[in-house]
Length: 431
Image (cartoon, rainbow, N blue to C red; front, side, top):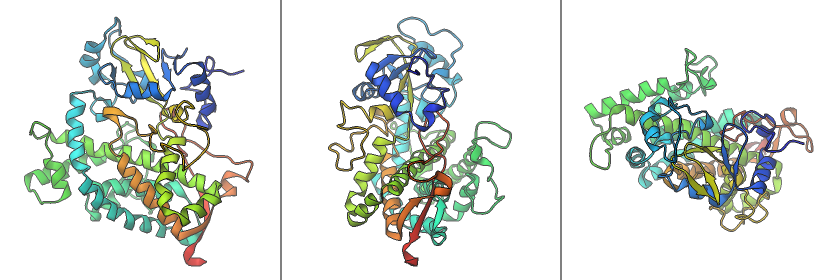
């Protein structure tokens, strides 16, 4: 019989489709559990994960992307490895991006980002989102079927971020092509969904870096009073102007992070609707409940499967000692189904008390800054889809009949999400 002692979370393919029994087993054994693989401590309890998220002094984000595979040139020995982490963090993957930074550098860079995602800008962006949702639906609605992720969620999420950052609409097709989301076969950049550049490297956003560098340099030289100018001239809390490369990294990382979260949220939402037609009817009658539907989808199918921290010093979490230098794996999807936090945690319930207490977007200093945007995208996309269709259902050709469904999930231990979702529906216009 397989148990957490024999199952390797990082390599076992059985966890890709359904990791939740494994999460339950971990939590039942102990919410903070030393695993026999790669020296990892797995944290599956809600309270324990929130505690770690809020303690950036003890837990570094330097390994948030690579987890237990972070390699330092010297051993992490002793009860305080903070100096080693700070000295060699630039040798870890994605060290230059905000997601791996700790205060005070993280505080400084996040302040620039939050100057771009203001309530005023989000309100302006929402007006664009309504129009965009209909434009995306128009591309396939008459067909009565689609592969939802490539036809809607990915281009939708990407273009929302493009508008948020002030990319002119005349350049939107270029960005769509650059992300491999063009409607035209063979368009520039259409091979870039693989996550690599043309030379097989890891910077699939290299073209976007170049484009945003031009945007920022042009606006700094000749301000135009537009959103791109606001981005180019945003300052650190001390009033200094960030290097161009730092602004560019913030912008391009928003594209990557925004697409990952929103695309997975919308895929999980529509999958649930297709499997539960009564929910479709209910939400058409009660549009005001769509935000709660989005929140419960985030809780029960958290886009982030595993987030990591590195213990800078020896400490205790949930009564369990965690040695300095230990990679700590926070399983958000497990915490969001913690029975100590949620009654009947595996049930989908949009009337659940405290529906927004989930940690799908993290907590603390590194809580997802795009969370409010993802919520707006989800609300608008679901509302327009429900208004413009009836009888949303899964394609039996691709997913099998009821009772024998089959789905493909992204084969990664970091994120939780469908790789494809084929749906059929009746367009309202044709009814």
